[in-house]
Length: 319
Image (cartoon, rainbow, N blue to C red; front, side, top):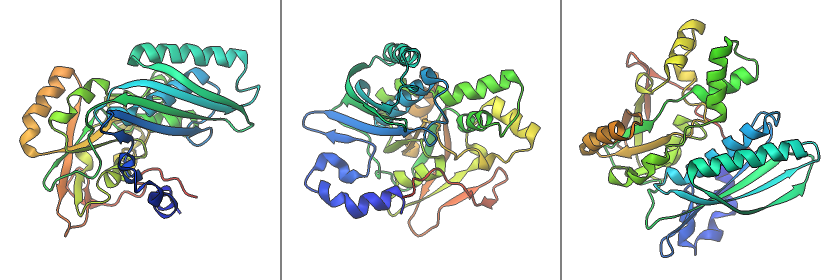
């Protein structure tokens, strides 16, 4: 079974008396009375990151992907806890110094503070990060409205290409390699946008598992469907050039995950304020589709408007 079947079958009933758990169907725990917002994520070597040859970069990716859960809810992260399981090789003095330096830099960049954690010995390397923020409200999942526009921030696909380069599945020149690998290790978390999301977003999620998979999670308990056009999905100039040079299929690249951009829906009347926000904050925000009625199947079209099927909708944990 996949992770959501597992949660629904064995754990959802345990949270029914706790409204703050949001039925275990959102990215965060939200105690509205106390204004407390919490998320937790676990990262395993070979699954969530390729290896630990660059511990300083891996830790940056882990921290940013963790606080992304709060940012997409319209919440600024304030504190974090980090736990790590590893051995003498992975937690050598050299590696620990690199990890500590990276955490210090991330704390300064995102104005967050370490509050605690745990360390255990294990031959299997993993990290767990708990992120904490405060807010009187959040932007929930499953609050999309019929005829909402679907938006995404930034560009998609660069991180996936970076991972393929690290796996030696794609060969490129060093300059291009450095660009994509940097995008893989340094996801661009849209912290500045978190303060304005409440003005226009009906529902939101961060793109961690993949564009299509996360759209479906965002509206998974609603009788709604969606229509998106691959041609409208934003990609970088470097990725566009790579697609042309390597004759790649864009539709196979834009829903592979690890983007950590914000995916949200908004009423069409909010288009003007979204354009203003994009220009004012210098953040790319692109409309890629619409929320449609429940009596229609979700549709994905290519650049020419032809209906297509994306084989890989995104990453799913299977148990």
